[in-house]
Image 1 (cartoon, rainbow, N blue to C red):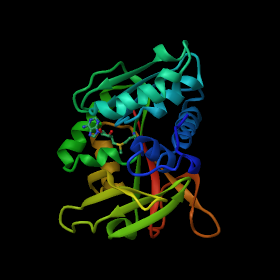
Image 2 (cartoon, rainbow, N blue to C red):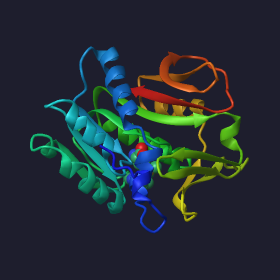
Image 3 (cartoon, rainbow, N blue to C red):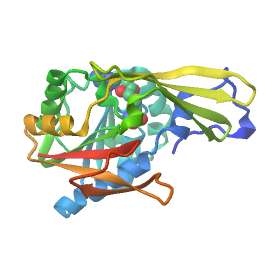
Image 4 (tube, helix red, strand yellow):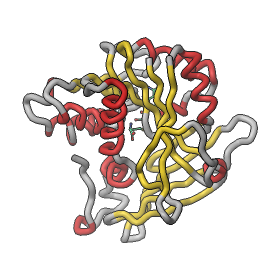
Length: 272
Ligand SMILES: C[S@@+](CC[C@H](N)C(=O)[O-])C[C@H]1O[C@@H](n2cnc3c(N)ncnc32)[C@H](O)[C@@H]1O
């Protein structure tokens, strides 16, 4: 569903659409979508129908969710109207007549929003790391817990490993542009990190700081403890496997111990 630029379009900093570039480079909601359905089904033997996507941005995961089953519903929550509007135009308006009424965008802070209770609630792409102190994170997780149906599932992603704490700049070739991920050194006292996404184009123009993230780098163990404190009955870690070159292979398995590789990503799943 994503709208990506192609080389033919000769995108420049002036003509670039940063949300289209984001979806064409950073975001893989299909993998998240399948992970959610498979993990819930494995636990309960049935398909989850109701999703709340927190920090939804362009709401692409919610759009995919309502396409997946005729009885599924999704609520996409974000406090910024800009990505919501972009997502409405580029994703939701393109859904068919049966799908459209089953997805609702809500412009609100995830700490204040009220939605019907859901089977699955997500906070992806590390967005919830904007909550930098434990009290606030616990408050958020408690509100998530209250927004879930019995036996509901809360899924977040996280990254870690020594390289996630240090300054870095990674450049990746995409179709028609370069995606640049820049990270500043982590503050050793607060664990604060600042990250940026830049886009560079073939004509030499650049969209610097297209997206800026001001996060605390939380550890998996800290987040698991906060989930338990919020009331979750169990918390599972789904760890990504590696290929022969040591790169993440996109296959996640339930683990209770793992090596602190140079850089890793995982899903943490709390069950109500
Ligand atoms: C990294 S984007 C995530 C977009 C999308 N979910 C994804 O996975 O790529 C973070 C989004 O969180 C939103 N956001 C930040 N703080 C928020 C809050 N307290 N409540 C709701 N949305 C928030 C921002 O407006 C932004 O659209």
